[in-house]
Amino acid sequence: MAKKSAVNRNEMVRKLVVKFAAKREALKAIANDESLPLEDRFEARLKLAELPRNSSKTRIRNRCEVTGRPRAYYRKLKMSRIALRELGSNGQIPGLVKSSW
Image (cartoon, rainbow, N blue to C red):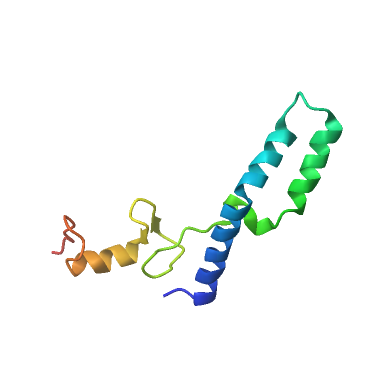
């Protein structure tokens, strides 16, 4: 089980990303528009830099929904390989049979 503080921090980052998504997208559009004057684009970059760092989408860490583990994460299942193995061994995932010999 992962530290609760790390899981909670990641949830806070997810909320910030949703909160600032529209503002960040609008500022990025202005900053990357070549037809606008250089001053306007630079001002948009400065405003973008003033936004909280944790409002960036790349700050989100994929974590297992069962254990909170950050490594060995399967995106399709939203869980780690260890949680998948445990649930598969217990027969709680339909269609998954863990081989043993």
